[in-house]
Length: 308
Ligand SMILES: [Zn+2]
Image (cartoon, rainbow, N blue to C red; front, side, top):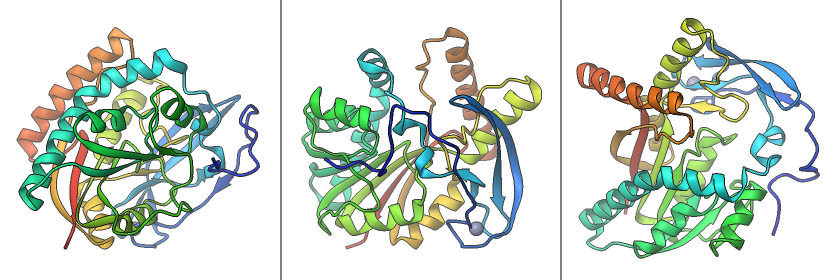
C-alpha cells in the first residue's frame, strides 16, 4: 500500500503550509471575498477567506492550507463506533443514490450493476451497500484510518492511494461515485477529467456535495446572526464550493453530459439533539425556498454520463 502524502508523520501536529491558487474552473485570478471564517486547526486559531471568481462564479478557499495539511490525514477518524453511527445516518442517502444509478443504467443501457469505483471511499460503507445491490465495488481512499477500516474490518477492495497519481485502466468502470468528496480535493477539474477516462463509454458518474449558496446561508446565520464559532464552509478541509452552474460547466468541460441535478437533505448525524433539530428545520426551510425560487440550495446530487 502507498500513502497519499510522502514524508508525513501522522502522529504529529503538522506545521501550517499555505498556498495561493488560481480559479480551478476558468484559470482567472480575479476574485472577491465571499465569506470569512475563523477556525481552530489543531493547536492554532486560523483566519480563512473564501473567495468567488469574478469571471465564472466558482467559490473556493484562497489562500488555503496545502494538501499536506488535510486534517483527515492526521486524525484517527473516530474509530468503529463513530464510523458505524455515521454509516447508519448515511444509509438512506446511499440507498436512494444506488436506486437512482440503477434507474439511469436501466434507461440508458438496458442493464444494471457492473464495476463501481467509489472516489474517497472512506470507511467503505457505500461500497458495501453497492455490493449488496449487485455491483463489483472498488474504492480509492487517501486517509489511512478509514482506508484501513474498509480493508481490514469490512473486507473491501480499496486502493489506499492518491487520485491524481493512481494508475487505473481506461474505459473500465460502469459507474464512478464521489459522495461528499469534490469539496475536499485540491484539483476537482483534474479529478473529473481522470474519472472521465476511467469510465466506460455510456458509464454513469454520480456526485454529492454541499451547494455554495447553502454554505453561505449557513455562514450568515451562524457567524453574522448567532455569532457562533461553528464552521459553515469548513475551510480547514473544504476547498471548493459549487452551485449548479459552476459544477455543470466543470463537468461539461471534462466531457460529461449532465443527466439530472437533485437536492438531498443534510442527514442528522451529530448525536446532538439541538444541532440535529436545526438540520431538520433548515431542511424544511430549504425545501420551501427551493419551491419558491426554483433554485437548488441544499446538498446537490448530480448524475452525469460519459457519451458513447
Ligand atoms: Zn473562474
